[in-house]
Image (cartoon, rainbow, N blue to C red; front, side, top):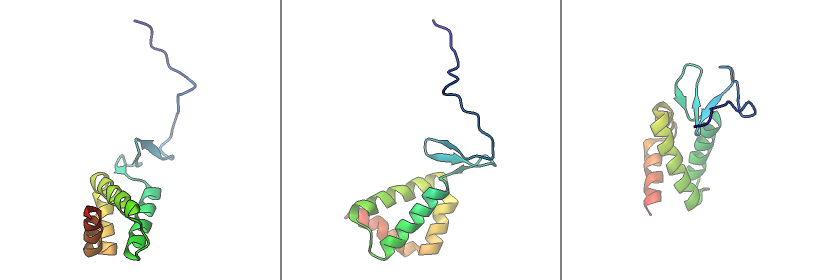
Length: 99
């Protein structure tokens, strides 16, 4: 077997002051998992567009997937979206996907 060597061109040093991302998930400074600020803003905007009838079927399906991802990684954010936009709207969105 060959020797294992560090590829210094691919080595990255990061402080806690910078966002740390792994496979689309952000690790916060207090070592909790998050979906990240940009993704949260995108989900919120997409829900708003859905409520106003401005989301295509494909976009609705994508939103359902993003919400499922958020619910799994950061349940508190999912709950905040249900509170903000109403459980009836989230339910309608999920039923829209089934059509």
